[in-house]
Amino acid sequence: MVTKHEQIIRHIISLDVGSKISVRQIAKDLEVSDGTAYRAIKEAENQGLVSTIERVGTVRIEVKEKEQFKHLTYAELINVVEGQVLGGKNGLHKTLNKFVIGAMQLEAMMRYTEADSLLIVGNRIKAHELALKAGAAVLITGGFDTTEHIKKLADEKNLPIISTAYDTFTVAEMINRAIYDQLIKKEIVFVSDIYTPSDEVHHLYNTDKVADWYKLNELTTHTRYPVIDDRGRVTGMVTSKDVVNRQDSELIEKVMTKNPHAVQANTSLAYIAHLMVWEGIEVVPVVNSSNELEGLVSRQDVLKALNEVQRQPQVGETIHDVISRNLRATNNTETEFEAEVTPQMTNQLGTLSNGVLTTLVSEASARLLLHLKKGKMVAESLNVYFIEPVQMDSKLTIKPELLDAGRLYAKINVDVFNGKKLVGKGMLMAQLMDR
Image 1 (cartoon, rainbow, N blue to C red):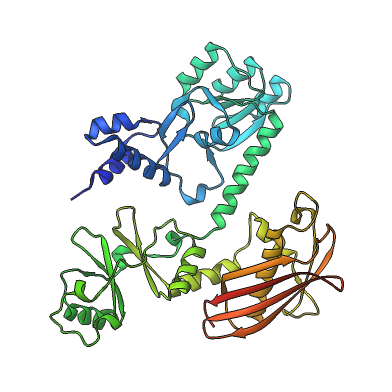
Image 2 (cartoon, rainbow, N blue to C red; image 1 turned 30 degrees about the horizontal axis):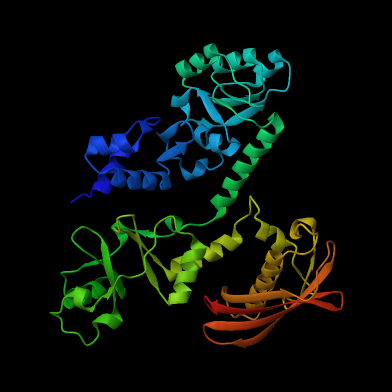
């Protein structure tokens, strides 16, 4: 039986791109409460099916494929530049492919303005008109308005015309920053990139018996299976430990582990790696918002993905990437490191920030463990403190020392020196992913 929540999501998917969506209309059309409609619309927004825009409302947008991560829709652009829509609202779902800065003579400007592009320009009414006629959207800077004739033209062509209070070059920088942020996000690996889909996953039902587990085990040689009910919802996990010494006639739901840890497809690789280490889990079910089985992700999947990530070229850099690149091993060893304090690594006072010290300590510890063949780590607890402030342009020496290590954990002390003076310390407890 399909739930009301699922009905609403399917209804939203069936709508044409660009359609306006409201809580009241959804509630009326599908005969549900406003609260149910609101929650479903929020879920649709999380799935990238709709976008909520100030002064416009919620709009059905095109679901972008992963290969299109470099592009923004005009609906997303409005949020980036804090703009308002003056006309052409039905074109907000369209994708921004390139933009042109209109800081030139009109004739020269039009040579670069083409269909599916965005013209960024100030209070130049003629430029607005020519751009729309050429099939381009318009972003008016400086907080200016435009004429009713231009707004009507934008509506006719379904091309957005947007106004923002920022100046032209600030807007260009904001758009570049938004695209760059999406590059960084693309580099993050999600469960959806590595999991085995449900049509390839073997599972058992609540009503199956222990004898069915043995049959499936003989067929697949696997020892862990998700358990689902008659609606496809995950209710438990059953392993070889659960069925040992049990009667063949016992129901699976009586021996399974109930309410297992589960993740959704948009969960990050880092989170599920931490979950598996922390809870000692080998396999995690992947579910949707209704807790229906979508697939399975194993510890082997996670380890393989972590190794692949290490080999991938980096396109966008996070602050962590900048700091890690600045950390170099001394004397061809991985037991002592050096780093220079750059302006990006300082706080408002011009001294090394707490966050950067934390990153230096954890990164040096991780490299030490790899060098000692202890495996990859997930930090469990980390304490850092400054003995004295560290100025910009200081050259630091970071010395991690392994105090204790077991099969699943490690304890590391880290001393940070500026020259010969001890300026900071760290103590890290970590769990080990593999050996």
